[in-house]
Amino acid sequence: MELTDEEVEALGTRGYFIRPTFLGEARARAARDEALARVSSGGLRPAGIRRGADRTHDSAVRGDLIDWVVPEPGTPLGSLWERFRELGEALSSGAYLGLGRFDLQLACYPGGGAHYARHRDAFPGQSNRRATAIWYANADWVPEHGGVLRLYPEDSAPVDVAPTLDRLVVFLSERIEHEVLAAHAPRLALTAWYYGRDAG
Image (cartoon, rainbow, N blue to C red; front, side, top):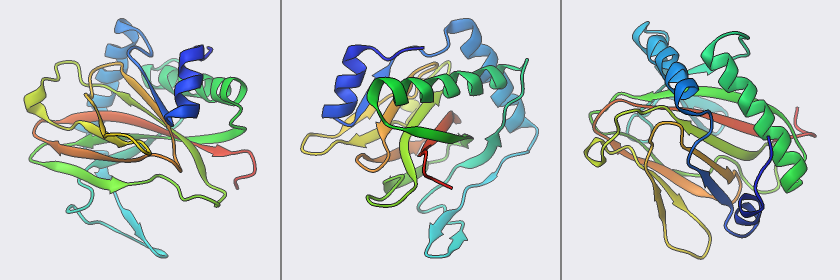
């Protein structure tokens, strides 16, 4: 897997890029079906937010349910995990980000106005997340469903990204503030956070 010249340039100048398709239709639908099965099984739990040394649940800030995805060869989500691994290598070699390990999280916003308030995934000067990549698993999304990702690039107007099936958004964790607007229907996404090679 390689980044295009346009993607590398966009990441450097704007801090993000968007790829319309990441897996292809058949693999995307298979990954979506497995993600939906996980949600239906009741295995997801309310996401926490960190306040100082503590982690709490506050649906006024963040209203999604989450689970972690680990390598499972031979499964659709296992194939997606492998694709994210390849993306990390491409970001390291093509955009010179020097990435190491990554975590992959499945998130479901159940609807009913669930959202995630504006935030950054990392703070400058810390040994932590370097890049964020979000893949969407919503096959029948329409604008009325809400749940749009809003990016806040530096020195430019906000950018809204519809969470449609197989769309990938990649941004620099320290640079781009973002939020998830109110979701009025179930919304599925898988997010990979890539750490620098010096991260623990």
